[in-house]
Image (cartoon, chains in turn orange, red):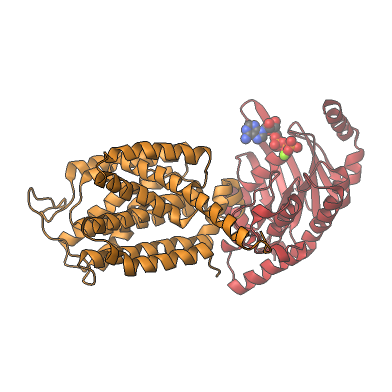
Amino acid sequence: MSTTLSGRIGVALALMAIVFLPMLIGGQWMRIFTSTACFTLAAAAAAFMYARLNMVSLAQVALMGVGGWVMLRLNHGTALPFEINLLLTGVLTAAISVLLALPALRMRGLYLALITLMIAGGLEVIFSTYRFPNGGTGFWGVMPSAAAPFRRPVLAESDGAYLRYVIAVVLIGFLLIDLHRRTRPGRAWAMIRRSEAAALASGVNVTAFKAWAFALSGLLAGLAGGLLAGALGLLDPATFRASESVLLFALSVVGGAQYWFGAVIAAALYRVLPALFNNAGIDPNLTLVIFGAALLHAITTAPDGIAGQIMGVFRGLTAWLRPKGRR
Amino acid sequence: MAAAEGAAMIELNDLTVRFGGVTALDAVSARFKAPVSGIIGPNGAGKTTTMNVISGFLRAQGSISAFGTDIARLAPHRRSQWGLRRSFQREQLADDLSVADNLQVILDALPGTAQEKRADLAQALEVTGLAARAQQLAGGLNTFERRLTDVARCLIGRPRLVMFDEPAGGLTQDETHRLGTLIAQVHGLTGALVLLIDHDVDLIQRLCSETLVLDFGRRIAFGETRAVLADPAVQAAYLGIEEAG
Ligand SMILES: Nc1ncnc2c1ncn2[C@@H]1O[C@H](COP(=O)(O)OP(=O)(O)OP(=O)(O)O)[C@@H](O)[C@H]1O
Ligand SMILES: [Mg+2]
């Protein structure tokens, strides 16, 4: 199996971030980067659906909320270790993602996007009505005031160690997406993206492979939500509003859905930029204006997003540095 | 292997397809048993519609039997797994997959060991002269190479019925000739029956021993190609396009 240069650079950068990032930052930024890493995974899930299948899923952050809910429920309801809970969270969210997507599997384009948006809206109502488990009794597990503690992984109880842990899981998530891209599902998805007729004529079970895509994106969003629950210990329904799902999808397009670092850019725009604005005394809501302009820019002139532009510069540079090599 | 399950032929019985007011196919019946059979007719005659019905993309009244199997009962992707291959009038390769992966995707859905599949794939690439292009992205191929890839896709995974919808569209005379030579080999290499749609009467005459002629969704002639082309009704239909075009 061949690896691309950008893929190898990505793994190297992730490993460097695992080692060095927690040494370089502290306090508030540790939390911001941890949450950025979680949203990177959710953005990657939205981006792969869009880049590989041309499917617009506007429910990724809402599915993160499902993951967060399951994770908190398992944490407070069982004595299982973090890893088992996280795995169960991923699998359950994947199953829920497929179930919710069932009516949408035969749809395309705008209709699919609208259905996922309605799912996000429905989940928003559930989250704000029942809130997130905090150690209370009963199925919903909510108690009025104080909250029970969250058990982080034994290996990663401090904020710095937990950031490392999250980046490692995000890296695994990216490798999982890449593995899919290179194997049977990736080939089936590419044919589906070309046209459903082409896929069917190739013997691809279109419904099954679309369902598989929803399962993978649900798994990744679930892991992201579970990790976010571990980062914060408590979750707030406002984090998972339908509008957040729409925003994260738009930023995935701005970042560049074709490339792995597009998801990193998307999550950085989503989480780091508002924090920088905040630190500089600017209203973080102003980032929305920038996002709007960036989206317009991406739609009109940069279809592969910021990542695509970076790749363009990178290719230009390598061609310039090796004038005799192949273009 | 195929013959053991039923007579080596494709039977269309009274296929009828309507799109709103347009009758795209009007009770068309034919029995294809030649190694390569042609389907010709003016624009809008219903040729592609016939292939789409056989592929399972369109619902039709009537029945289709292939080697004794009622394939109309199979879901479209199952028909490919059964051994149906086709190319499209506007080719449908996945540009972001390599040439080899555009073939592999068909093998993915079929039984067999990885080793058998590799050999099958290598042979198809060899026969079509694409071996050197195997790892290139399909997006970088020229028109002829794309058409060759279409043919290669139709050679793999033990096909039983292969359908080409205007495979020579956009090709030069020389390329059309080379493509024709390849299509003529399909039956010998795989045992599959071939259905070929094309407007190029020379190509049809060269490859097809039998030909079905459609016009406005009706069968206006079917039989030995030379006889069919000499049929006055067929010539009138073709004069019709010449006047219109
Ligand atoms: N999906 C569709 N919806 C409505 N009408 C259709 C559809 N597909 C085909 N038709 C109509 O059915 C008729 C037959 O079309 P078909 O594509 O089978 O023609 P064809 O013989 O392949 O022509 P060409 O040589 O131009 O490819 C035409 O009148 C066409 O407009
Ligand atoms: Mg046609």
